[in-house]
Length: 103
Image (cartoon, rainbow, N blue to C red; front, side, top):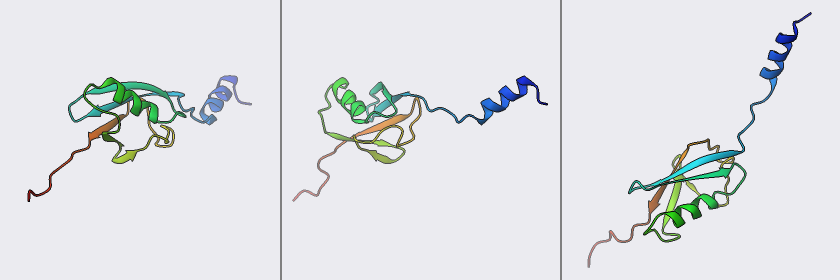
Protein backbone atom coordinates (compact mmCIF):
# COMPACT_ATOMS: atom_id res chain seq x y z
CA UNK A 1 0.00 0.00 0.00
CA UNK A 2 1.45 3.35 -1.08
CA UNK A 3 1.63 6.29 1.26
CA UNK A 4 -0.79 9.21 0.65
CA UNK A 5 2.10 11.64 0.05
CA UNK A 6 3.52 9.42 -2.69
CA UNK A 7 0.11 9.14 -4.41
CA UNK A 8 -0.15 12.96 -4.50
CA UNK A 9 3.34 13.26 -6.04
CA UNK A 10 2.49 10.72 -8.74
CA UNK A 11 -0.75 12.57 -9.56
CA UNK A 12 1.12 15.88 -9.92
CA UNK A 13 3.72 14.31 -12.22
CA UNK A 14 1.07 12.69 -14.43
CA UNK A 15 -0.81 15.98 -15.01
CA UNK A 16 0.05 17.65 -18.31
CA UNK A 17 1.81 21.00 -18.18
CA UNK A 18 -0.70 23.83 -18.42
CA UNK A 19 0.10 26.47 -21.02
CA UNK A 20 -0.01 30.05 -19.74
CA UNK A 21 -3.05 32.09 -20.70
CA UNK A 22 -1.01 35.24 -21.36
CA UNK A 23 2.44 35.93 -22.77
CA UNK A 24 4.32 39.21 -22.83
CA UNK A 25 5.94 39.73 -26.22
CA UNK A 26 8.55 42.31 -27.17
CA UNK A 27 8.84 43.96 -30.57
CA UNK A 28 12.29 45.37 -31.39
CA UNK A 29 13.27 47.25 -34.52
CA UNK A 30 16.62 48.11 -36.08
CA UNK A 31 16.71 51.43 -34.21
CA UNK A 32 16.37 49.54 -30.90
CA UNK A 33 12.83 50.82 -30.26
CA UNK A 34 11.17 48.37 -27.88
CA UNK A 35 7.46 47.81 -27.38
CA UNK A 36 6.09 45.25 -24.90
CA UNK A 37 2.58 43.89 -25.11
CA UNK A 38 0.77 41.25 -23.06
CA UNK A 39 -1.56 39.09 -25.11
CA UNK A 40 -3.59 35.91 -24.66
CA UNK A 41 -2.02 32.93 -26.34
CA UNK A 42 -5.23 32.50 -28.35
CA UNK A 43 -5.48 36.12 -29.57
CA UNK A 44 -4.31 37.14 -33.02
CA UNK A 45 -0.87 38.70 -33.30
CA UNK A 46 -2.38 41.62 -35.21
CA UNK A 47 -2.92 43.26 -31.81
CA UNK A 48 0.84 43.25 -31.14
CA UNK A 49 1.55 44.61 -34.60
CA UNK A 50 -1.02 47.39 -34.20
CA UNK A 51 0.41 48.28 -30.78
CA UNK A 52 3.90 48.63 -32.26
CA UNK A 53 2.71 50.97 -35.01
CA UNK A 54 0.76 53.13 -32.55
CA UNK A 55 3.61 53.41 -29.99
CA UNK A 56 6.68 54.03 -32.16
CA UNK A 57 6.92 57.56 -33.57
CA UNK A 58 7.89 57.96 -37.21
CA UNK A 59 6.78 54.49 -38.29
CA UNK A 60 3.68 54.45 -40.45
CA UNK A 61 1.20 51.58 -40.46
CA UNK A 62 2.15 48.84 -42.91
CA UNK A 63 5.68 50.06 -43.59
CA UNK A 64 7.53 46.94 -42.48
CA UNK A 65 7.48 43.26 -41.68
CA UNK A 66 7.50 41.33 -38.40
CA UNK A 67 9.59 38.18 -37.92
CA UNK A 68 9.82 35.55 -35.18
CA UNK A 69 12.47 32.82 -35.34
CA UNK A 70 13.25 33.78 -38.97
CA UNK A 71 9.60 33.31 -39.98
CA UNK A 72 7.43 36.19 -41.12
CA UNK A 73 4.62 36.91 -38.67
CA UNK A 74 1.16 37.46 -40.11
CA UNK A 75 -1.64 39.05 -38.12
CA UNK A 76 -4.07 36.15 -38.21
CA UNK A 77 -1.67 33.75 -36.41
CA UNK A 78 -1.66 33.31 -32.62
CA UNK A 79 1.21 32.99 -30.14
CA UNK A 80 0.09 29.41 -29.44
CA UNK A 81 0.40 28.47 -33.13
CA UNK A 82 3.95 29.83 -33.24
CA UNK A 83 4.80 28.28 -29.86
CA UNK A 84 5.72 31.64 -28.37
CA UNK A 85 6.68 31.89 -24.74
CA UNK A 86 6.68 34.74 -22.25
CA UNK A 87 9.41 37.26 -23.11
CA UNK A 88 9.91 36.17 -26.75
CA UNK A 89 11.09 38.84 -29.17
CA UNK A 90 9.51 39.72 -32.50
CA UNK A 91 11.78 41.63 -34.87
CA UNK A 92 10.46 44.50 -36.99
CA UNK A 93 12.17 45.41 -40.27
CA UNK A 94 11.23 48.57 -42.14
CA UNK A 95 10.74 48.25 -45.85
CA UNK A 96 13.56 49.80 -47.84
CA UNK A 97 12.94 51.40 -51.18
CA UNK A 98 15.65 51.80 -53.76
CA UNK A 99 19.00 50.15 -54.23
CA UNK A 100 18.66 49.86 -58.00
CA UNK A 101 21.23 51.08 -60.47
CA UNK A 102 20.97 54.66 -61.58
CA UNK A 103 20.28 55.10 -65.27
